[in-house]
Amino acid sequence: VININTQQQGARISPTLHGIFFEEISHAGEGGLYAELIQNRGFEESNLPQGTTLEDGFIVPKRTPHFSSHQISDWKMEWPVKSEWPSWSATDGIQLALTDKQPLNYHSLEVNIKAKNASLMNEGFWGINTIAGNKYVLQFYARNYKGPVTASLQSSNGDVLASYTFTDINKKGWSKYSAILSAVKSDPAAHFVLTFGNTGVAYLDFVSLFPQQTFKQHGLRLDLANYIADLKPAFIRWPGGCYVEGINIESAPDWKRTLGPVEKRAGTYSPWGYWSADGFGYHEYLQFCEDIHAAALYVFNVGISCDYRSGTFTNDIDSVIQSALDAIEYAIGPATSKWGKVRAANGHVKPFPLQYVEVGNEQHGPEYALRYNRFYDAIKKRYPQIEIIASMGIGDVNRNTMDSMHHIDLADEHAYKGAYWSFNHDNHFDKYKRGNWKMYVGEYATNAGVGTGNMAATLSDAVYMMAMERNSDLVKMSSYAPLLVNVHDIDWPVNLINFDAAKSFARISYYAIKMFNENRPDVNLATTVTTAPSTAPAFSGGIGLSTWDTQSEYKDIEVRQGDQLLYKSDFIQRAEDWQLLRGKWSVQDSSLSQTAEGAQLMAVLKGKSFDTYTLTLKARKKDGFNAFIVPFAVK
Ligand code: AHR
Image 1 (cartoon, rainbow, N blue to C red):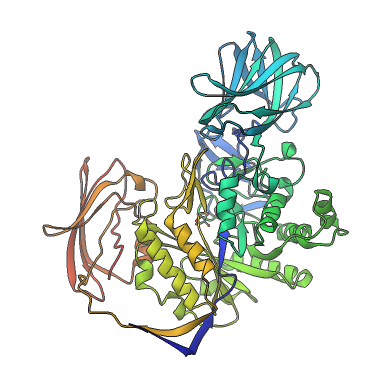
Image 2: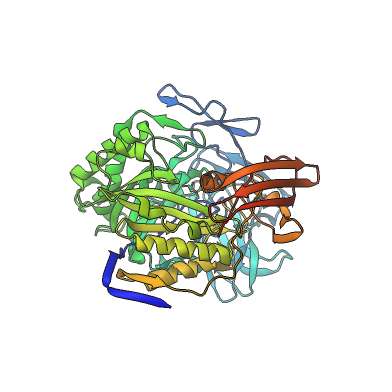
């Protein structure tokens, strides 16, 4: 029985409650939303990130005198690049070399053609989705070569799906060549081929291929952009996430580098292990916000790189603040202002819908507080209408840091939780003292104990959203994270929208968010629900083995109480969940035995609503992991 008291009203629900978080992670943009079909189009993928060196296959930040460091001593990241020209290959009769001589932009590819009709190939982003009847827009720059060149899309068996021959390639200096490739046959995983009719040396740069039709003709992949637009997000948070912070301060994103002709952009190294060519740059981001009627929420680097990685920082805070002010001016300044003029020259005279900025990502502590205060004062002085968000990090907002921050419009709390966490913590937001700041849950997702996302994840997300709604006097904004994953390069266990070159699908949590947003209530009403006594067991829960790096190595997991099988699955658990849940559970005792084959964990658990349970977990594993006990649910 549900009793609703219309006279007793609670919080009004924020109209901006549901937005999106878009980060360059898992090829979400590069090889994802950004519709470019050629991977490594500018031949820059094998560049080391700025300010780093390569030592024994690891990227190591350089220590320069003006950058202090607090955590870089033992930090290093495996360098994932194995070839000088990733994604490109050639037939016999061609010798390749990367060169920085007379470049169009940093590096170009030297193609030494020793046999007529030899070919250069690009695999696309794990295939190029070619559809019969569709057209593809090709551009590339070449110099030095004389002779015909045929550009084509081909299947792995050599079937030609689309082709165009340039007969007039004969310029000594850089020249741009463009054509439309019309597909006569389909293949969801085709590749791109340039066939040289003559021998000689050709230099190539910026080899780009786009579907002719993109979202609003602004260069975004239709299916993915439509998924996002259909969510009707109130805002888009960009560019991250850890991406904002960079692996070191020199290689962290700089919005100014993402403006101007795409073939001249330097690109940004994502901490997730690949380059963004920055085709989707600051201007394109603002344009996308406008196109889908979402407010822009731009996140600045505060001059500190990712804490969990190299943790380098610059002491030149003034320059970082000036860059933030310039970015705001680019977005909303009059077309007569310095940066407004640049925006107008880039084709957008009117201001873009920038309404929020966030100062850093997942940072806190005294150094952060100091920087935040300076950002806040400088931005509010010039742009009082912009709402400023303080980044607080994973877990509950950090009150110690906040005490030293003068003004906070919104505090960003990140919440990655285990299955059913929200069921047991529906009062999570109630505990916050209402005061001078509101809350933005900038990243949330149920991503532990749910494989790559299942119904348990969605139900948990839905309950979490209900808690936000009920506390919407405090929680004004939220965004699920991460948004997009290219299934060929997965950096994060659970994501909202999955895709490959040809297909995409949104997980059930996507539809839950859509439903909540489309049916967003105006106000909470006092409600009581009376149900028949439950016949469910007092306990449904378990224990898990977990590591960060080798989480996917667990197989055939079983949780038993005595002979009774309570849980059987392939599941992923993370060390943090144990950290997050500590306190709610008490683990009375535990023992772990490991063999080369697998592991067995016994834990005696005691919770508030049940007595003592002794559970045994068995899991097959591969080599090298630490074990954690991870209770993941209690009911
Ligand atoms: O959403 C994935 C990552 O989770 C983000 O980059 C980071 O902010 C968070 O820790």
